[in-house]
Amino acid sequence: MAYDLEALHQQIAVLLSSTPWKPLREVASELRVSGPTVESAVRRRTGKSFGQFRHSILLAKATDLLVRDQARSFAEIATLLGYKSRDAFARSMRRACGKSPAELRLAPPAAPKIGMA
Image (cartoon, rainbow, N blue to C red):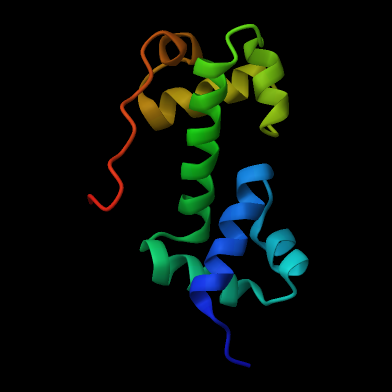
């Protein structure tokens, strides 16, 4: 069966924007397509694997919550994003950005320019 990979990519992005921790298997099941079809749609549109794409959405959501919702604790943000602990969230942010959640909250990275790679 042939799919409109552009439309499928949009559905994947919408789904991951609300639940960025979902694994490939669950995304594919929810969209009623195979895992390889999800991988193909993401790779064709972004040049990234599904995992890389999901991680970039998770990182953007984390940064947004850290900056926009200053009253929320790091533990609350970690839970909202599907991390098992505040420490796991902090390790992930430090690995991805080189900064702790507290540092990101004070000086978030610049938003990437659309269309620039």
